[in-house]
Image (cartoon, rainbow, N blue to C red):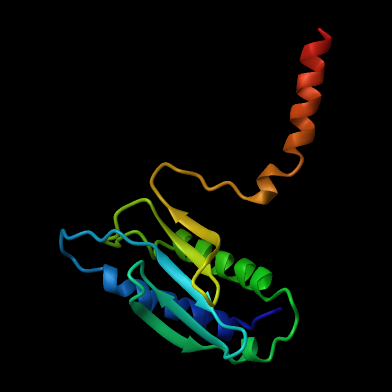
Length: 148
């Protein structure tokens, strides 16, 4: 699935609108994660907090016409890219959400599919790409140690 820049901007705008609730200039902090729920059948994108309070609801027409089985895999890649770009741009720097917090992709039953982005001052979220080949490298290292 390839989304146009315009559609990616709509998604980014929805995320900005959702987190705007947590940008007050006050000292009050919230403890929550941000849940992102795309619906392939209706094309709707819901964003809500831990209390299931809806923060944003928008429609992405391209999702409703997408018929392949890899919907969530494609959406995960797209959302992760948008969120990382927003994080790098400083969009999440002034939120009053207590760290660490996450942006989480959920399915229609609100079950977690994957963590898209972890916001924390000193934690790195390791993804599959970083771990590719690690088992082989560790096995070779162990073999080398045992041979000595």
